Length: 377
Image (tube, rainbow, N blue to C red; front, top):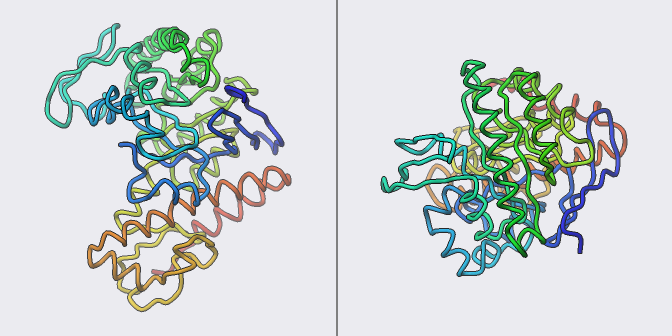
């Protein structure tokens, strides 16, 4: 079986649909990866995540290194055996969480020293340690370790962080290549940085291409800059990366974010939004999100989304899910999350079909018009 192969089956404008083939399975692109931060997609069993249509999930290096520990996961069969998921797993590098969650961080050329958000214990992540952790976890797609700074930072700060990230990318690649059987069976992606600056993005892309990766991520977006600014960056950033490699937009996003990013040439996505929203009472539908806690759903016998074929919409009513959520029953969060993941995966399937048929623009425009239409509430 191929270690890693990306094949484009059809294009429509800048958008592409195809497959990534790995030993653990085939990933249909554009792909949405449900987030399994702590070795679980919250409120879902792995079999239900697969049934919803996911070909790959994401695990988090930072959280898993702190609890239960990468070495322990390795002893227990790696993430696949530990959590009972047999398809591909991508792990992020831990860089974003180190910067956003940890107290008392100290950055240096070596890496980042930080205090755990759990118990205050001190740790150090370097590019080499990040790759080692991901190897111990059994990750199939490993991410290079990078440094993230806010898009509001000065250009000088952004340039320095990007340049350091490129040096760390080379160290990450070298550490991955030294990983023996794991490197022979799996893949590594580099991460483009540069905030909203086209010149910095180009310099970052050129450095990553010079190193050479199996795929390329666009990092540093979806951190508060707004959709218009993000799309402005995506109007040029994907084109700076190799056309024959997958392009992964990290941490995105809302359904309309995903549709717009696919139109601009993105192949892979991840976001906590469908699971987090499910736990807080928001369900995604073809006509926009709804708050199931709203009193108007108390006697609504229709499904969460009349156009959804998921197991939740085929079985339970809005009234029942409303009751569960208002009563604080854990089944409420489970059903909401299962529906939301199924909605996201169905959206990806619709996007793949639209690209293959050469009708992406019509699909995207219709989706936005219905999703964003005033609800009269």
